[in-house]
View 1 (cartoon, one colour):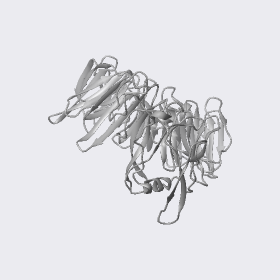
View 2 (cartoon, rainbow, N blue to C red):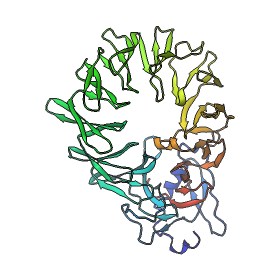
View 3 (cartoon, rainbow, N blue to C red):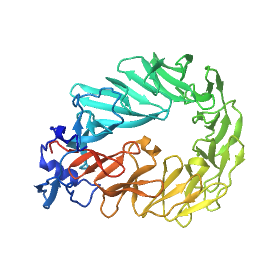
Length: 491
């Protein structure tokens, strides 16, 4: 990075010193802090004067250089980015709660600036284990969307319409189009399906189009987009183990297979199919469970019911307000429940674990063999492949799903990711409850980056988007800035 200093991007200037003061004082950071200068770099002292008190900040030199081809107003695919990393590069306004509204830019993993601050949002999605960036641009002419590979080797868009990234495919529907174009995880076109995609599971795409006085549902093969069936219905659910639930009329329901064959059942409501089973309700308002042939797995005798398995067909059914069972539809077996459950609704966790609150007000994780106690009420987050974060009032603990072990209490607040894909990472945001500053922890129970940032979150599990004082950019797992730019804008 030292060698590149001579060609640093020039356009990073402060439009308003007030912006820096307000960003530094956002709600997530309750205590202002000083940002020191790097060794050998002359620091410029800027005095900021908010309404309530004077604060001193030392402003450092920006980090990051423009690519040789220049920083552009749109992302251009290239083979030499390494990794594309989005970060908040500009403040354009303020929300009612006082937090800033950002515009986002891209840099690469070498610290070269790729785009200007042009995106109103950048979301991280996964498709067949490939990281995909979904970008939105908001201009006076309207909103445009695009998506790109993590390495920047391909890009779709920008255009008017919508992009949906599924674990199997990427779906692009342009405004005014009657078809959805389907791409694979490498950005290569697979084909097109009619209408708007509703779901893509179990190798089956379900889409729909509105016709005169009816909705036509299409069932297509996800690998080829070949149409398998089209039928008129109110709703077709997502496929699981070769079947989906279907609502034919207001009170007529059934199961449909991949070829469009419908098996009507004696029920007035069906939940989504799970491995060929579904929670159902009859015309008396009683709940039960049926399979795709219409056979009752659990009789319609329960006053309420919910699906409570993470991925398995497990159902919690209430015989009364004081008594309930948990039934495995596939094995027809009832699970053993804690004696002090008192018919409260279970929280489903991965690997057939459940959680509830006992009579003492403590949180319990259990399965058929073991139970684990946590002091106080907890919120649970599946983080990485094999961990559940147990977020408590006084900190967080890690529950190892593989070894069925509980880690020590960490005195930081677990901060849930804003983007669903970030739950895949083995790292996560932690907040110091005394200062309000944020850092990064990992599923091994270690602090990767100490809580010294106004805000920080994982970009891809190895790089992090951070805001510190007036600065926003990307840091690595050592806390070194890959790119750092002064937040500019008008208050």
